[in-house]
Image 1 (cartoon, rainbow, N blue to C red):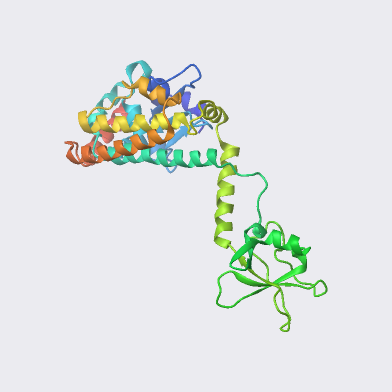
Image 2: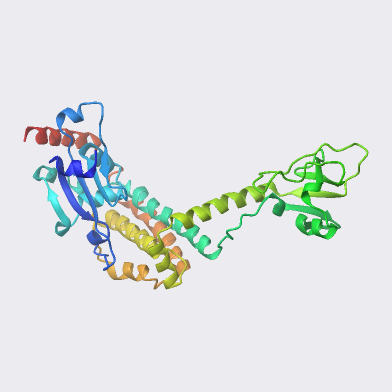
Length: 351
């Protein structure tokens, strides 16, 4: 089912402006995100093709079926709790029967994980972004030969330098495994013996062995840093996938403020941590942010990356102690929630 089909079906029972405009953190460049809830008609709900959600390709418009909506509320999912507690001026549609669903019914100590741990996952993501920004990778991909070294004296020299000094080509060389030594090989060079070469191609994942006559002695001992090469390949893929898929507007903003972190990502990290604190301390879910100036300061790059990471880690430590003493239940009352959900669906179907 498409979003357009859902809109003409009269199944929508809640539609709200979400994201930065609901938080009060929007700027002139902010998009309008929409989230909502729909109820499948009875014959669809009891059939085989239960539909959990409908969204547009960019996922900035998402509608959840009532059952899925309540399931996520019971798990204290931050985005869904925020949808339930949307400020009145951001509510477009809300069926009167949904008044039965209140944040107090769902808020529990699970919020420490759902809000706090999600926020710290964003910190880890920010660390990864910071590393990518500060350590860009060359577009030209290195190959196995760049991770091979020749033992020389008490040290080693890069294989490429060694071959150049000898005037040898890697295709003219052969390797044989040295028993009982990890990734260590004898290197042979004879133009007329037709060795296999050190690698088969620039996309090879390991060195290549040749058939070596027993009477030949190796010209050198080669060590292949296979673990280093594997890590490089992983990092290379992650970096260039990130370059290809990154949000260029947000990345340009990151370059503009010069603090080497995704400021919008970091702003929402602190928003989540603050909301988790308010839930534990006051039992309140404040979607419209009272700390707007501080959060927008983060978005505008007014703080250093290290300082924000330090503050976030300290806040998370504080949240652990706060939730330990909180009067919130361990988890929502699922029996009560299940009854309300059944009554709601019956009410919708009979109206």
